[in-house]
Image (cartoon, rainbow, N blue to C red; front, side, top):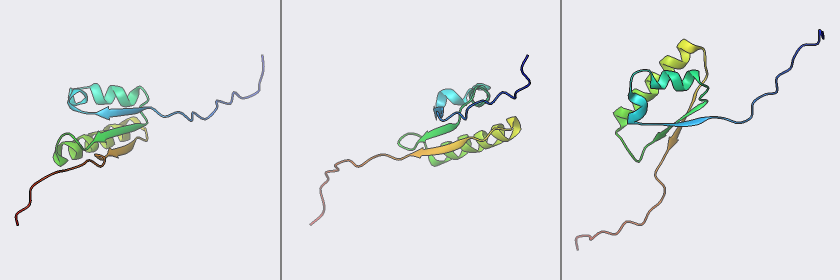
Length: 88
């Protein structure tokens, strides 16, 4: 039997999970973080600022309780062509 310590390589791959109504169900977000989510994605094209704020507060609370570090990624809507009429 070897007495050499086992060195685990640093995991370079990150698990990114998009939060939304499905992750609001009781226990889902905690299970996601416990399973290894590294980054939560907030899609700002959908939902309100209050929805995103509430979800991020829950992420921070659960991550602290589980002793995990979870980053947040805010996904902004990309450029799009907008056509409208202007008053003369």
